[in-house]
Image (cartoon, rainbow, N blue to C red; front, side):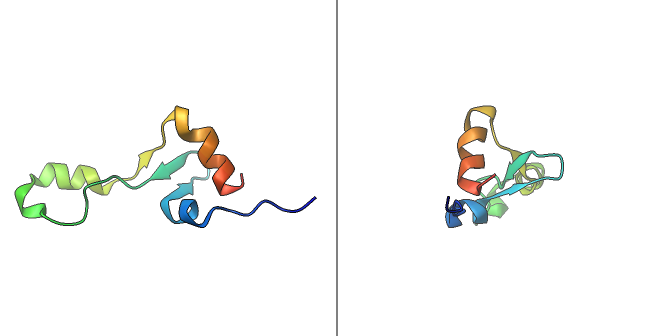
Length: 64
């Protein structure tokens, strides 16, 4: 039986932590930071956990 290939788009966008959580970058982090409050910019810089509804499909894309 052949090995499953990892989806190359998914491996650039998601990462799996040591405990098994799937993390992703938050949106709205490209430009126009001077219009946003410092606290919102800091909040956007942290990774977020993928929702439970999407977890199964993303794991399949990552070959996990």
